[in-house]
Image (cartoon, rainbow over all chains, first blue to last red; front, side, top):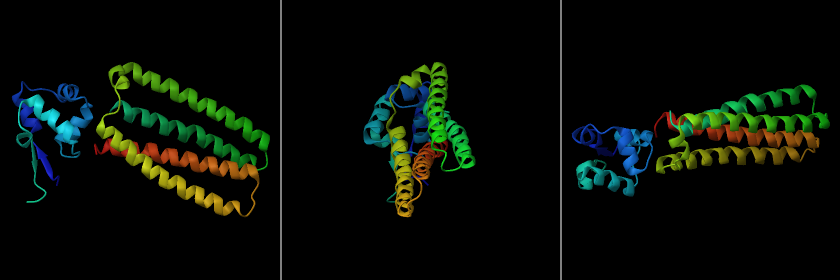
Length: 70
Length: 137
């Protein structure tokens, strides 16, 4: 199980059903990378994580949750 | 399927096909037909470059935005992992070639053995790229 979970899918839905492609273009990565992040298969860099949070206008901890130490 | 995965497929399949044909002909020609090997290798390299360039351009025409974009952080990580694995294969192969080189094999045999190791390492690299793209890692 991934140590970093995220709320990207829900946030995309709440932001006018934003597509993975639209989010990918906003944070300058490929759609496949957004899909991998969303599924928890790839943990983004800190910079990409901040960019994702900025797109949704949320603090980082509202988008990503670390569960490795729990 | 992303542009980079498609180009990895093109690279791997073209190498398997074209170099596969080359090595099959080398084995059947025998290790001492040096003139044949040089001509055949030249044709192989030209064919490989031609096939890869044409197919990559064809794919880029259908996905121009992806083709122009630089690799993102995940794609760079995938490339680094694939390169690390392929390098291990290459280093192991070269070590074997050095060992068997001590038995003084014919130069043409040695050259083809080194080429085979290089091609195998490159195929390993592209296979690793494809596997990681498939797993969305």
